[in-house]
Amino acid sequence: MTLPSCPVAAGLGCDRGTPFETLLAALDQALALAGLQRSQVTTLASIDAKADEAGLLQLAQTLGCPVRWYAPAALAEVAVPHPSDAVLRHMGTPSVSEAAALLAAGADAPALLVEKHKLRGPDGRHATVSLARMVAGVETAPSNVEDETPARHTLPPPARGKITLVGIGPGHADHMTRRAREAIAEADTVIGYVTYIKLVADLLDGKEVIRKSMTEELDRAVSALEAARAGKRVALISSGDAGVYGMAGPTYEVLFQAGWQPQGDDVQVEVVPGASALNSCAALVGAPLTHDFCAISLSDLLTPWPVIARRLDAAGSADFVVALYNPKSGRRTRQIVEAQHLLLRHRRPDTPVVVVKSAYRRRERIEFTTLQQMADCEIGMLSTVLIGNSHTFVRDGLMVTPRGYTHKYDLAGAGAAPRDGERAGRSLSTGLDGWLQQLREAQARGDSVATLAARHRLPADYIAATLAAAPDTTAPAPDAEAEEAA
Image (cartoon, rainbow, N blue to C red; front, side, top):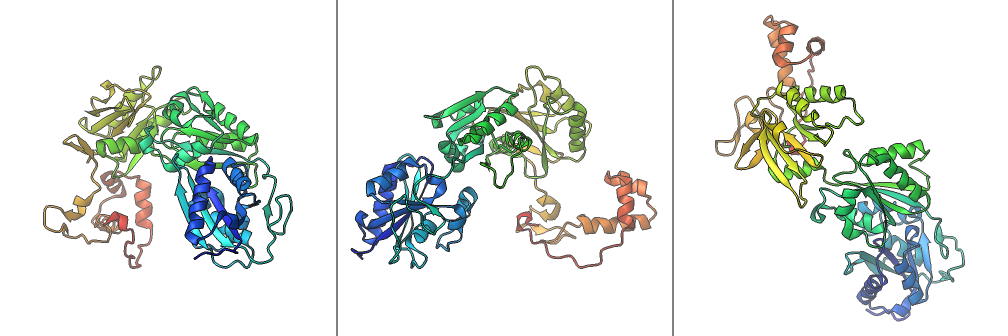
């Protein structure tokens, strides 16, 4: 179908830095889908965060038509065929191109002529185009004329800086999320520890790069805030996940200290998650984290050693699989030995341990050992140490921590039938309800609170309070957590 006399509004969205050629190709494809010509495009429209996009501005100049810039709140009010939660998280509205096209076309615009046509350019950046027929009487004014919509035509919005805390994962490009790569591509300035900067060197062409040394985390955060206050888009990178022993915490501390507020401040903040070291290392060696686990840093640069020691002792007593971060450095050599001593109080000497250095990087090294021999391994600041629990085993070069299915099911039989006294979809017979019943029966037989506390390795006051509480006589609800497959 061709609509020769139909004036069209084109709504556009794009990745940061999308070139003019990709935007023009996407627009031409969308026009072809509707049987339209470039000459019928009388207005371009997008979100105001894109008002400094060189490719968009060049497109408007080429077509000789104005661009209407809409605030996220205005776009969010428009009902569209394809709202996106991802776009909502990153842009503050569930739609850019579709909503912008409809707003620019006029309040009474009918359905879109073309819905959210997307094109990936040669450089991996995406452009999205939606087309709407202009409503008769809607002014296609020159770009220096105000209108009654919450749009702005000529001048870009005031510079608003942004800090994106980017978790780059273990370091290999294959394991970096698409959003992490986009955040670095969008940035004017990239800040990070020198080693992490090297891991993303191929993404840094044309950017201001600020390299910092180890222990300069607060300096990195301050530099990021200063650059963002100047209106720059900053990517502050961490290996692994920015929120796991990464830059997210120090940055928020610096921001709040400076009076920053999440709402209404001139600096936006986004956290881009990445695969943490424990995830990456676990993936290389099997399935060591399938049951309850914890992460403990052995660095005492900011945490008193007695605090670390209590955490190690508690984790060992509670039979957690333990992931040790920052296990050893040139100056900190005794901490890993102390950790070994504390965990040996609760674990067998042959408890499986694996030391992973530089997971998914060029100098990756994996060493399987035992808790007894752990301290003799080659361990450094680029190592993560995974220590199994009492059920963890190593077989055929893989470290596995069972989830607990054998407690409930006879895996040797056909169909994995529940064991005697167990029911599929319900808690174990030694789950909370069953255990409370056993406690009461043992007390009725004459067992003291102290005896029960020692038997179950739980505080006596907890046992006493549990026994004193009135029994729950309500019928248990079916377990709806399908993930437990219980």
